[in-house]
Length: 341
Image (cartoon, rainbow, N blue to C red; front, side, top):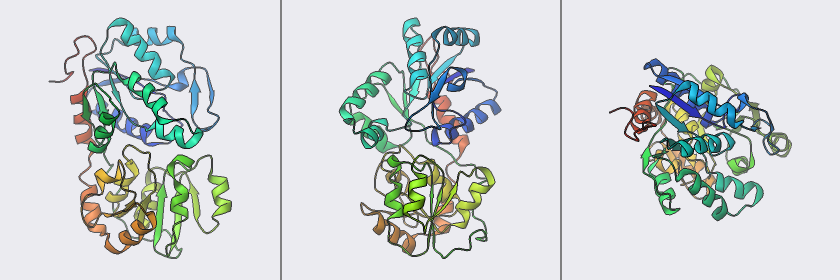
């Protein structure tokens, strides 16, 4: 099939949406599908004031029309609710083409934390955006239920996430020489990730932060005992996971948390809040602990977490299975029927 992906999140950004799609495209191409990406670097733009690493672009309608017409896609998928997503959605609606969308990011909650925008306003926009979709893809049962409570109407179908098991697996703990246990956070260093909840936890050992973002400099000054390592990817990232003792996921606004299953596959139990994402993943004894009090979750996970159980369950998340789900959810742009029967 010829698959067109429209996304406002793309390289050089480093986040779960970009990593998910880069890996999915790799697997789709291995299966013989042709994938074209419409992304921000193809248009004029500027850095986002709140996140300089995110590029806000101005899609040129004529360029988008020519690009889609030249590609003649069998499938059109819109991954984000930004300017590119809006432009491609408008193209599809005007031509009567069917398209699918995915709900990657809880922007209403992000905007409430960042700029105090009431969630009822942003959820109204999100409902409108996804209302034309043939299928909204969601990663977890709790996210699906949450969207239904917010009156999202089109069919919601599951699309999980996977782990590169050749990269993320248990290894000897030889990397860090700081006091143990090593408590690890991986992700953007930004307000909406609630990373300060992690840094404020009173726990033995050493807190390690892998990632970067707009509040990193302030947090390094405020929490000098924590180790801020900046961005890591590939083998260096995998070694950080495997050399830690516990993964702490403080976010309350993620829709899944790809980093959690990478941590599990690396043999790390997880401590987190009982919210969308962690509540769907940390479901068995030995995988860690969930608690409304993050400090209690950390304390319990250090006592109850089992590296072998974590690694065994983490290995169940494969990109092959995820790609199969993704293909099953695609619809033909002209008929609206399943793209692959």
